Length: 213
Length: 367
Ligand SMILES: Nc1ncnc2c1ncn2[C@@H]1O[C@H](COP(=O)(O)OP(=O)(O)OP(=O)(O)O)[C@@H](O)[C@H]1O
Ligand SMILES: [Mg+2]
Image (cartoon, rainbow over all chains, first blue to last red; front, side, top):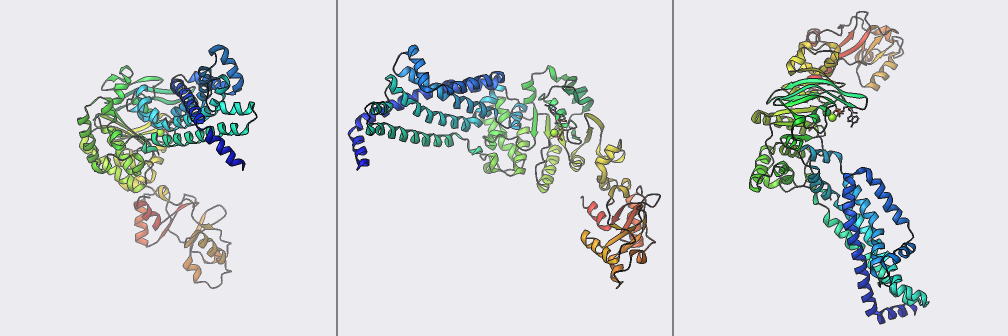
């Protein structure tokens, strides 16, 4: 019974899997935090300087188009091996959905609303913090959600440069031609991605102000 | 006092506002009216500097607004806009207290003000304070819009078609409320509308605009009595009957496409035409559209041979009026002669239109 075999294998390696999952979460989490810390302010900045917005979006798009293995290869000489290049790569990929959604969320607000704010005497900054950001929050969160799911996927590459994570089981499985080992890495990675997607979909609802739900 | 001095606005090469000079007095309710695109909103937004004029100056209390701090200026002018001016992510309370918050009023004073204003616009604070705009009807939203504009007690309030998206019954009520409010508060209000009824009802003075110019700026009575030109006359058109029936002519109110037929039509055809158009009489005209007479459904019923032609049966001695006759005379004619229809013809007897009892009834009913 092959399914039972796979399950048995996973149960035997449970300790390993848990440790690697922990690493995986940690790596993706740090990458996402970095991506948010860069992406959201960048998106806000773009609303102030619309002339640079298409340049930045283009750049983020271009980064996304770099094949991930090649990207990682470029980063190793700069950052060495370990978790740093992995985090750099994953945050670079996660940047696009965050920047894009932040920018479109902030600029997509009804002109009448913006006008009402200005007409009542809000400064640009007050308009940003009191109107634009709260109203754009659901859109920004939707971008973060896409980015997080992507990050969990890309983090499997981290194992290639010795940063650990669930990718380790997968690559070991590939080199040993051991399907059970591949599955033991892939299934938890999938479950992790789905679970995180679910959690963020709740968060997305939670940050949506009641009046615009 | 708000004063425009030779104000123009250009977008590229097109001049949207063509040198407007006018003066709005303190506590005056001024309504800007005119066709879509004539520059009403532009004028309004130049007062709170959401739009800057290309040339000319605007003064508030003799101070050039272009030299004032724009944020300060706006916080001291109430602003109500069409439809969705409320912030959807803020409660009624947060919306209303926004300008006081920007002006850094202490919390207790803001809370008190919110209650006061909700009472003022007839919405019980306990019930509505914590609702979101989506949880309000259109009329309630506009009341909150007005309350919000009043929040910091500004002297000037700008309103851009505040009631245009609201159903007619609620609109009438809001207009009445605004009127009463103004009797109490004596604000200087600049109010934009498309609706001449609204303008006549609310305004101390009406500023009629056309293609970026002011055509006439006067009290409703003066405008009704002495429209400056054909454009104004057209705009106020049928409304004159309300206040100045002697100035309304047959031409203003007649139906311009009455049901008519050539005399060569058979009675059967005439019946068909009448029932199609839902009328009970038909005007008989020749090929040059000159009026020959009238045939009613009753006339036709009394003839059994429906193959007969209209020319054989029509009544030719019809009372008619010229287009420039006052409707008072038309009314008198109708009641004296006990007739329900009066065709309107020009000096060559060419049919221009028709006045029926129901035209008059509708008109008096305000349609
Ligand atoms: N940013 C702009 N660029 C170019 N043209 C503009 C701009 N804003 C307004 N216009 C033009 O200026 C004219 C006046 O606009 P405005 O909004 O003042 O009209 P309005 O009288 O308020 O019309 P409505 O009754 O439809 O609201 C219109 O023809 C409009 O197309
Ligand atoms: Mg307008």
